[in-house]
Image (spheres, rainbow, N blue to C red):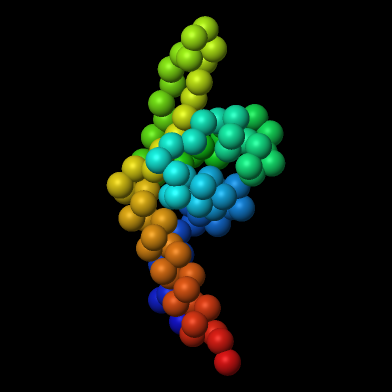
Length: 100
């Protein structure tokens, strides 16, 4: 059972990061405002969590202008997809081992 716990990725332990990755795994890309609204996070909180995931190489950020307004969107990288799927698999294995 302990080996399964070792496979749980600490990057996804936070509720915010788990939510960010969950949303991005089922969408090609999502803009900052939509993520903020879906997850109920503040600008600063979302920015710090997305920055951390970006630094790990799990998500990528695309900044552009739509008309005169800045738009920031995020998408999952291949490494992020692989890491998140491995994390979910480890959680599932842990839960199945602890079920009576």
